Each structure stands twice: as structure tokens, then as C-alpha cells.
Image 1 (cartoon, each protein chain N blue to C red):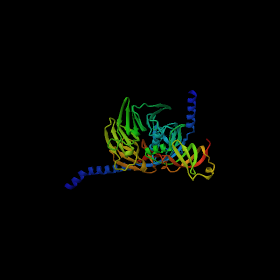
Image 2 (tube, each protein chain N blue to C red):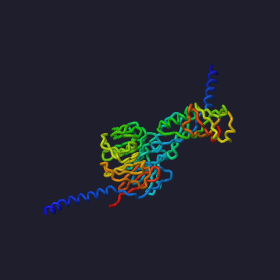
Image 3 (cartoon, one colour):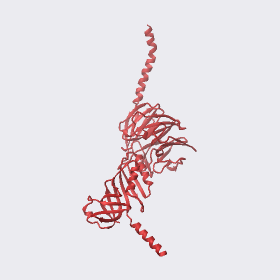
Image 4 (cartoon, rainbow over the protein chains, first blue to last red):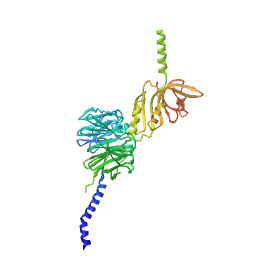
Length: 278
Length: 162
């Protein structure tokens, strides 16, 4: 009788535990391949950005950006850019780092304007903008330049240790933190906006060139370029899922609602994954 | 005195004008596997004196270089730049002008400080028409490790109009 009572007391906890396990298992296998968007011949999509629900991608091989619909048809283009790399967008503005000239361009309703950066860049490879802050992956300087108004902060220095960077290619700002695709250290590093190191993600997962990053409130996606896959982590750095289907040399990822876009640089196509409905 | 200065100036100008040089180089580069790799190579070429225009193709693994009208660049300089970038220079296709001479039964072209030995791989139809003097040609240097003592082995593909 005592055992039965004890068991009944433990049942709710047991049920909760079982539900939790099921829930966690579902979180690990949520994203599934939906489609490939074939792009114009000879285009090489390096990175993506969304403006008013319209998709732009950078095509540095052809010195341009292209705007496409979900079928891959070209709607607009911006030419004459000297190797545009990982582009960013904020509200209805497009931000373009020019790898060859060390310039940052802003495109706003067809108007082109150079953004003044308070530090000398050396091959800017990625840019992200949030409100009045922008962060640039300064490739050959092995650092992130974080600029807010008149203030500039340098994050990282060349190296392989914690808080050091080695050829960073992409960067994102999310809820006051700076997420860096520390490409040739094969990892993600996270910093506070004051430069304080917070965490490393991806160590032990055999990443080879972590070249692109994007995130939501729950998930961090990073491209594992040389292994033709995209890795999904939670914000604690736990690996949730490895995406491999129809992914070839991924250089960038982009979340929008429950859709994940992947730029396949050597395949002139974007791969689309969606979250499985439960 | 004034006449002497003019003569000296004109003579120097003629010598410099006649001096051979590379005009275009299409350099195969191994190891450029990523976009920043290729574009980084493009950046470094852009900074070299004597480069008028450069484009690096990741697809083809090549750098396409147009050189300025007057420059001191050698093929060795270009290939050193590739090596300094961490990559391996392989075959190069060049357009150059220079002085064609024959010594010890070997045709050779001098351009800047380099000598290009014309190889037996050159089509006999081209070889049979060679004459000492100024020449402009397109050719291939297959062995990137040449360049010892500033000398290369070159197969002429085409004689061009000067």
C-alpha cells in the first residue's frame, strides 16, 4: 500500500520527465528539406539578405547583387560592386561590404551611400546592422569592428585562443550579443557588445570553415562549408541537428519565420529548409 | 650642351621603348578554394606596381593580369606574389614583347630582366619563321618552378603584330 502511494506520488514527475524527453527529441529533428531555388546560370550566391520580404543575394564572382523571387527569377540587380561579400539588411536598407576596396555601402531605395567607418578595414567580409549599431567582420585584421554612433569597439585579435579570431567571415548582432563566424578557427564565438568573451560553439563537431551564421531566439545556424552541411545549435551550444540534404559548399544561412535559406556557393542554388509541423 | 641633352634624352627614351616586357599574364593558381582566398589574391595583385588590371577567377583557378605600358614586373615577381599569398603558381600563359635572338642554336626572348628560352614544343611552322629582332608573342610557360636565374622555358603559341 505504501509502495502504491509512493508510486502514485512519483507518477506526475515521471510523466513530466517522459514528455520532456519527447519534446527534446523533437527539437533535435525539426528542420526538413523543402526545395532548391535554382539561380541564373553562372551566378555564385555567397550571402543573402531580406528587404521587405524580397530576397537579395551577393554574387561576388560577377561583381553584383541580385534580387530574386522564390522561383529564382531575377527582379532587380546592383552591379559594379568590387566583390560584395556577406551582406546585411536592416529595415529596408541593404548593407554591402566590398572586399576589394574596404568600403561599406548602404543602399536605400536605390540610393547608394558610403558608410563612414572609424577604423581602417582590411577586406571586410561581413556586416550586420541593428538599430544604430553595426558590426563588421574585418577579415585580414582578424577582428570585429563594432560601431555605434561615434563609438567604436574592436573585438578580437589574430589567433587561435579563446576570444581570438582567425579570418572571421560573418557576424550577427542579437539581443546585445555579437556572434562571430570565426571561419578558420572552425567555430562560432560569442561576445558581449563591450567585447567580453562569452562562449565558443562548435568545438568538437569537426567544423571546417565556419563561414556563415544566422540565429533566432532559439537556434543558431552555422555553415560547415567544407563538409557541405549546416549545423544547428541552441544558445547553450548544444548541437541540435545537422543538415546535409541538397547542400553544397554552403557559405551563408538566413532565417525568416520558419524557413531557413542556405546559399550554396558552388552550386548556383539556394536550398530551403522548413520547420516540420508537429 | 642643349643639343647633347636632347640627344641623350631621345636615346634613353628609345632604349626604354625597345626594352622587352610582359604585357599580359594568365596565371594558373592552385589552392584558391574559397572566395576570400581568390579575392585576397586579387587584392594583393592590385597593390603591385605595374599591374593595370587584375581579375581572379575562382571557377578557373586563374589570375588574369593586364600590365601597365611601362613597368618593371617579371614573371618571377608575379609568381612570388602567388606564393606569398599561400598558393602555388602553375602554368602561365603570357603575351610579351622583347628582343628575339639566337645563340648556340637556341632561340630566346629577353623581356625586362628575364630570358624566355623557346622550347622544341613550339610548332615548327612558327619556329621556321623566326628572325632576330623585336617580337611580340603569346606563349605558355608550363613549369612554374622554372625561373632559375630569371630564365623560363616558353612554348610560342602565336606570333602577334607588334
